Image (cartoon, rainbow, N blue to C red):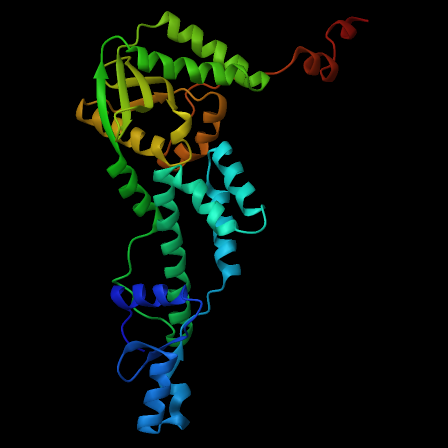
Length: 314
């Protein structure tokens, strides 16, 4: 087997998507060739008997495989509205490939993530095929993992900066939009919205970390307040709807954490409310611990399930 260089890897992937021509790896010349070129070599050199050893067909990649890959990508999109549109395109019947791409074209950042995701998945198919053929193979020159690709895309498409002072109208609008969204959600989200609103009204917060898209629009915001010389509190953060599901918060928080370290803060206290409660699992690998925890429960469930103290005296 020839060394799986990045150039050869890219060539195999490109050829896999060609639904018209069949391709082979010529082990003797260590290059990719077409079915016609293979036939010519066999005729010229008379190597018919050894054809199966010299020429290896590249992995199959059918339209069904492509469809399944689109379904897999759609399942990873965390923005519910965008995910529904992508799934609807895939379930629409004829022309699903075009409809899927049309939906992605309306979200340029997500579209780039799709092509990155697709490229990485195809590379994994090729790598797996190579390993099956040759066993343990050294693949030092393979590209980085998909998450690193995603970071590169987001770093290119957004800028991150600190802001101090009273919030601008744009910042206030994003904060209020998120609180309103929470208020329209479940009972727990509504309570979370009320608690956050009250806290933000009582505190005079003048420290922010923001992320802006290429066009300058506000994409995400994180509010923080120093408590002591080494502890900083994050009462609220949010990502604007069009930019959710891209991993933007992770990079915004990374920028914030590194900034706090430069300011010599060693501990960060983070409020989680609404959908952000799910981020508790995200923080746990970094040795996050509960400092406090708020729970909601109904009076009805307590009164029905807990023995009445009054009955103990009867």
